[in-house]
Length: 215
Image (cartoon, rainbow, N blue to C red; front, side, top):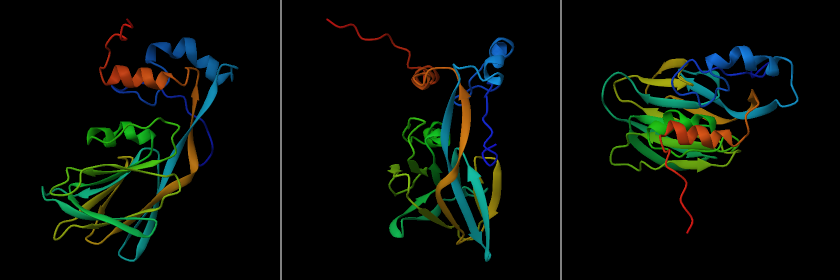
């Protein structure tokens, strides 16, 4: 859909639904508004990531809406991930892996490892270590034009590369991944107000306390 510029109407058949617009019982009554391009419908454009995996002298390109992950393989041993930002050596972390996420992906794996939540319209990317050992476990928010280079050192085991948890590859010791903001965007059709994002966050994180009383 991103390559073709086709917008999406998300329907929540799962348990989270950060990206979805409708519940299953709303399809019959609400879907015609989107299909008929009702004036109440607006376009929600989400930033994406371009990732290039390089190993064994070959490169493979991926497009990701949520995140790009490099991590250890099946053996429960930490790996080393060397992080470069805009040709500057930033750090080497000893961890289960590293996540590079978009604002959309900040509510996914990034959130699970304690990373920050970003509003969907923020164009920044986030780097978050996974279970860092004797290394910094802090996330880093980068500007939209940042180029990130990750290199993984796995020792005798293989590692794993994943884009959106859907496109997965085994990776060898020394493999590199270059990540930057893509020229493509994912488009969603919306009727709910932009502030609906805050309602979802509040509900999903079970932070449903009453508003404070002003005295």
